[in-house]
Length: 496
Picture (cartoon, rainbow, N blue to C red):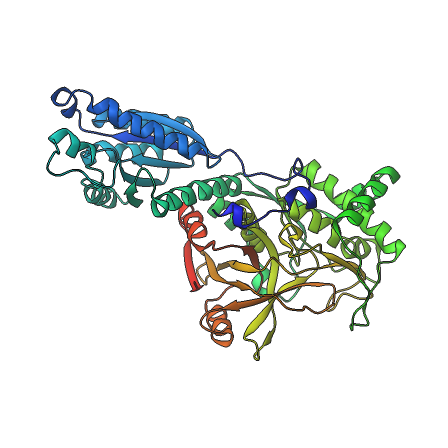
């Protein structure tokens, strides 16, 4: 459901082979029972194991590696399962509640695996034929009996679990939640193992941009790599003429070059600007490859048109191409938003660098976008390039990207910190609606949020987000909540 509604132009925009895919998240699976049942009801164990294997097969279709511990039906098998999951470093564990189980058998799995748990009680049929039901049939349908007991035991141990109750077959509600947990595990796996580069420093004076890189490592497990401007300059300088020509061909294929609009500073892309943007894009891609980066936040002010200023001014096209490939690039040195963009991207929703722009009280929408790079793989049409004679509020000039995201449901996600330093994810769902956007060389999308535009802006601001956020396609609050839970991070929903 989620991915079909989201990025559909990856092959055209980024190249199918080049697209950065979510990592191979590992999810543990075990089913449960009570060892006394097996001699009493021959064939019951095998029947329940078959339901677990069916569950595992469907999970594999969600792009995760299934690590099966089989059946847990006493304390010792629970301990073995927990140790097994820990040895395989699973990102998430599903307990397939196939019949009644004593909570003492499940608790050691969670304690020893140290992985988040999802309890999935899925009945094999919509309901028993009461007139013909046997005790064995009742036990095969006892998928909710022990759910309260297990949750109670976990909470006494200071642990938590999500609970999904439904049917093994033909249950969109239950399977949507199961799939969202699998997608969240994939996103969390990538965040936990990410290398994010910080090139330069946060935009001076933007107090919400400042963050402690160690805090990101502590909260998510990712590594923050400090990148120097000379690291990028070296690779821009060494870009071969053939590489620059190939990059120019990619740019011409991916972008359109419209006639100037009303804004006098937004004109055509000159050959010199195209050449420089392509050269910087080549250097930027080599930088990402050489440092093994999964994302990048950048900002550098520069002085009097010096070379570092020119390089940063020429970074927008290359940053947009990387973001479309699943390597998010966040401007203005916003590390937190780079993480939010990566989480959104790994859910298949895109994740474009954005902020609130001017609003329209007549039509009840607010423009959402930013100057500079964007996630061009979620553009509503072929994105445009414009030559800007200046970058407002910054230094330098060059080529900038202009587009709006696809029309339909959208989600915005902002990673922020409270006064205690703890991270929060601020979320809102809305709609991208058709209509013109300014021809200013900026990304802009007309977005409507409930209950109305002014109320939304007030509530979003009062939630305390950074002014940047990730703009993605589809309804993503449910899976993003699950990603946050995997890291123990609070979520605040402003509009849904």
